[in-house]
Image (cartoon, rainbow, N blue to C red; front, side, top):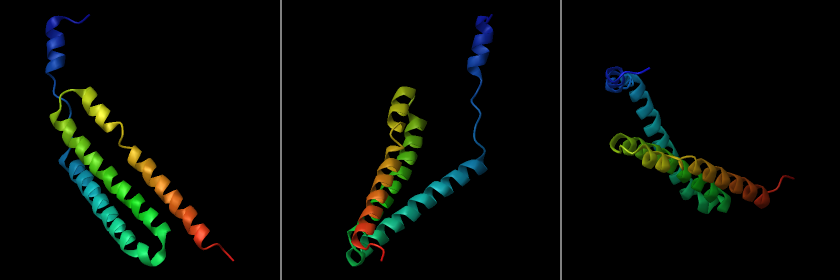
Length: 120
């Protein structure tokens, strides 16, 4: 049975914090992902005129993954400042939507690629 003083002591405990090395690794990987997929999208759109419309679908998949990384960053910032957990989770629940959209764009690109240049 919890006494009121024990309940107050349990509530007064602070949450465990991340170590600084984990935060640095996370930030480097997230920023590296944003930069890498942004370069892939730029190269894809610049090469789409020369290689056909299927490359544009791959570039759209790369843009979808850029937005995925930006959504994770926005989710982290929003979760830092918002106290209502329902609002934070309702914002973060759609983070995997960008992965699904990227997969659909890549599948469409592969299908268009095989239609435009079939194997001999």
